[in-house]
Every structure is written in C-alpha cells, then in structure tokens.
Image (cartoon, rainbow, N blue to C red; front, side, top):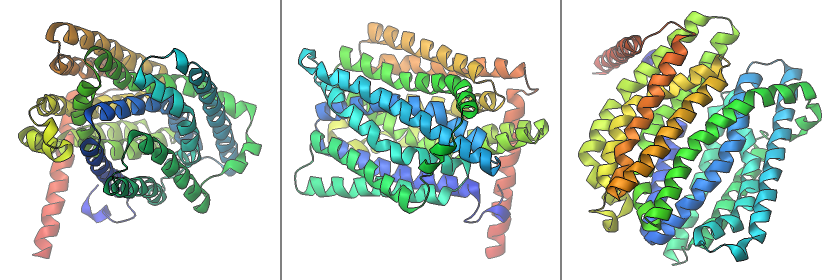
Length: 446
C-alpha cells in the first residue's frame, strides 16, 4: 500500500481508519468505566462482557467468515440466497441463546454468585439487541463498504461514550445503568442500519436449503475456532474470578484492554487481507494468494515493532492514564509488558488461521486454536498454583501463541510452499518500500 494508492477510497486505509477511531472511543470509554466503577463493579462488568463475547462469538464465528466467503463477488440471485440464509441461521442462533438465558433466569434463586446472576438477568435481551446491526456489518464487510461500517460503529460507540459521560456528571454511573445503556446503543445502531438500507432482512424469502447446508458445513468449524478463541478469555475470567476474585480480574483486564493498540492495525489488515486472499483463490491464482499471505503477515510484524517498544517503555504511564491512581503499583503494568512483547507473534499466527480458512481448511484451523486453548488453560492453572498471583497467568501466556505459530506453520507447509523466513523477508521489503515512498513524497513537499 504505497502513497500513490493512499486515498480516502483505499480499502486498507478505510479499514484502518475504522479500527483506529473505534479503538480510540473504546479506550476512552474503558478509562471512564475504570475510573467511575469500583474494582468489584469493574470486574463484574468485564465478567459479563466475557460471557456476552462468548455467545457473540458463536453467532459471529458461524457466519462472519462464511458471509464474506460465499457472498463477496457472488451473482445477484445467489447473493440474495446467501444473505437470506445468513439471516435465518443468525435468528435461529439468537433464539437458542435466548431460551438458554431464560432457563438460567428461572434458576436465579438457586445461584449464589453475583456475577453469574448478572449474566442470567441481562444476557438474553442484550444478545437480541445486538442482532439488528451485527448481520448488516458482516454484509458490509463482504462488500468492503468500510465507510458505512465506520458510521455504524460511530453511532454505537459515540452514543455510548456521550451517555456514560452524562451519567458520570449526574453521579448516576452504576453497573445497572451500564447494562441498560449497552442495550439501548445496540438498538439505536440497528435503527441506523435500516436508515442506511443495509438490513436486507427481506432476503429471508430467498434462503434455500442448499445454501443453508453450505453455510452450516463451513460454519461448523469456523464457529468452533471463534468460540475456542473466546474461551481463552472466558477461561482466564473464570480462573481469576473464582481463585483471586473480581478485583484481580479488574486489574488483569486493564492491560488486556490496552492490548487493543495492537488490534488496531491487526484487525483492519485481517479484514482486507481475508477478502484479497479469497478473491485470489476464487480466481485460482494461488501464487497471488501466497504473496498476499506473506506480505500481510510480514508487513504487520514490522509495523507493530514501534508500538511494542513504546508500550514497554511507557506501560506505567498507560496504566495510570486509563485506570487511574488505584491501579498504579498493581501488576497491571508488568503484565502489559509481557503481553505486548509476545504480540510480535500475533500477525503470523492470525494470518496462518486466515490462510487455513480461505483454503477451506477451517477444521485444521480449529485444531490449531484447540491446541492453543489447551496450552492456555493448563498454563493458567499451573501459574495460579505456583505463583498464586496474576503473574502466574502472564508468565505462561507466551507458550499459548508459540504453540499456535508452530502448529499453523507445519499445517500450512503441507498445503503451500512457504517459510517464516520468507514472511520476514517480504515484510521487510514491503516496509522499506513504504518508507521510501513516504520519503519521496515528503521530499517533494519540502
């Protein structure tokens, strides 16, 4: 992505812009919550978000990648059938979660844990509220319409931020009000989806058994991968909550939330890289597919090096700015340093997974994530057992991503010809090319 292609319509730029702006709002919102909530309420809120994230991962994991794979570039009639079938499955998954949530709600008198009670009360209605904008965003991703995605994300995040600020000003910022606000902003975003004509729910009439089966056969593995990834957070959340308490969870979540600084370039590039790799494969251009894979994985590795160095140096300041004085002196800063250092392996690991999915090998990608999950859970328990603190979990964390990189490498080597050395070489060449083009453009300006 050189400067000659760097304009407001460039999909890489728009995808990055979406992630930068939304991550900025998320960081500000997170900072307000950390500062206004007690550590116990903060821990409870993040416990709820973890469970909500798990059920969202079921719906998204089943359909997000499948929507992009089967809808992008499809003929008009088939496209309608794909969208209609996506809606049918999305509604079905939503109703299933609501039924389970309702059963859990009836069992509240038997539940003694406050965090679980919150989940029982609020999970079902929150999951319904997010459906009207979740499906349209998958569709817009397949269409690479990042401007509308940006607007929808802005509506969701900006409205939440403003109302949180007002509630804090009125001294009404409570956990209960935050749960209500979460639902309200979801519904507001859904209304904007209708306004932007991105709903496409009428295509349900075009759904077909054939497409439903295609989506199911593909999605049953991608959903396993997605939910397994969420189990990383869920397992950590449960282990910390039940062994160290909600206060420790709040401390651990602070560096975890600050890791969004890595997800900004990574998340935007995964989306654009996935669509480019899918297009190359649909054209039977395996050489281009392989080049895109190595280019994105390598370039991103070099792109995040300055971020990693900056966070390691200024971790204490970042924790103070986001969490406030009550988190200073806790384990948060050092845990952040450990997390950010090993994030250098994230680009290769994530694009290994994307490549496996695009090669129609979601089952192998699921096996990779399952291995990582096993390493993560075992490591977390061992860490808690020996260290009896958050450092135990942080210490064993790197083994998780290392196992994923190694498994992904050897799994892909059986299908495509590449080496990690080639990823680094191409990434370095692309990095130098971008810097050279920037230098030339700046020289022209001055």
